[in-house]
Every structure is written in C-alpha cells, then in structure tokens.
Length: 109
Length: 115
Image 1 (tube, chains in turn purple, green):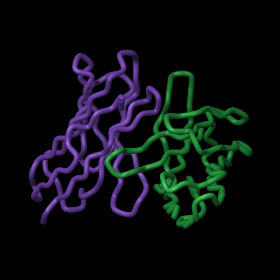
Image 2 (tube, chains in turn red, brown; image 1 turned 120 degrees about the horizontal axis):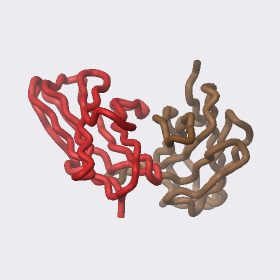
Image 3 (cartoon, one colour; image 1 turned 180 degrees about the horizontal axis):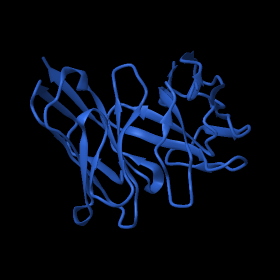
C-alpha cells in the first residue's frame, strides 16, 4: 500500500476559485514533505517543501501548504486559481521517497 | 546549467529487447534516482543511488538494473523488456545531507513503449 495518499484524483475548477488538495502519509517518524507540480508535457517541478519550523509554508505561484503533524497531513492550498494552474500535483514524503498517486487539476477559463 | 538530462526522449521496443536509459546531472548532486510514472499510480521508485559507488532497490526494481557510472551519470537498463514496462521514466537528483532528503530535480522523462 502506498504510504502517501492524495484524496482527489481529478479536480475541476473555474478560474478564481479556491483550491485545496489533500495529502496524508502513514509514517510516524520525522519526514520531509514536498509538493511537486507537473504541467502538461513537462517534468516535475518543486512547488514547496517542509522540513521543520513554521507548519505553514509558502511556495511559488501563490501556493501554500499546512503541515498538521497530529493528522499526518500536508494539504496544498491556493486562494484563487488561474487557467495556468492546470497541471498534475504530487505530494511526496522523504520516507522511502514516496509519492502520492497525483491529483489532476483542470482550471476552466 | 542543463540540470538533469535524459536520453532518449522516446523509445519503442519489442518484447525481449534490451535498452539502456541514460541520465546525467551537472549540479554536483550526490544522490540520483530512477522513477516510473504510470496513470493513477504516481511515481514509483525503481532504484536509487545515495552516493557514487552505491545503488539500492526501490519499490519496483524487478526487471531493471542500474549503474552509477560516476557522480554525474546514472543509467537504467532493461535486459529483456516486457509490455508491463511501458511507462514514462524519470531520472532525478538531489543533494542529500545527514539531515535528510532535499528537493529532487527531475529530468524531462523518457516515454517507453514495449510492444
């Protein structure tokens, strides 16, 4: 079983809507957490990462994520999406270098 | 800086053929990785090399071999390709430290089809 679970397989939104993607992991020790984005036809790029400190981390392009240790969660958020945010989003955990199955986000103009 | 480069970009093989996927990075990273990406399954780690001279199995190593040729290069070999190995293969690298894994930098991918 995957140690990283992403709650949504495909999310469809209109521009300016808010986005939240869920990510849960199953390892109880210290982990580094990441969100990557893969735009159509491109390779994966880092959106943001959490190693320690403030559990609310800010990344590129207006994305942020909140680490909630008690819930083993690292959810990704963006207050107002744009058409250019259409992509596949992957949550990753440093334990066993595990990736979630990915969430495809489609933003309609 | 080219980052992480992979060759070839596309490949079609017949069942039983062999091939090697090449990966190189110019960021002086110590750790390198091979993943496969299949629909609905995310990225699954095939093999990784924590440092030059070492390689370890990941989640799905069967049917693959790797070589860490030097610090820059990490190749993935399919000795006898099977249709189940049809996938997109990504190479990645990172600067690992004693405190853990840092962000990975990914190559553009190789789309492999095995008939």
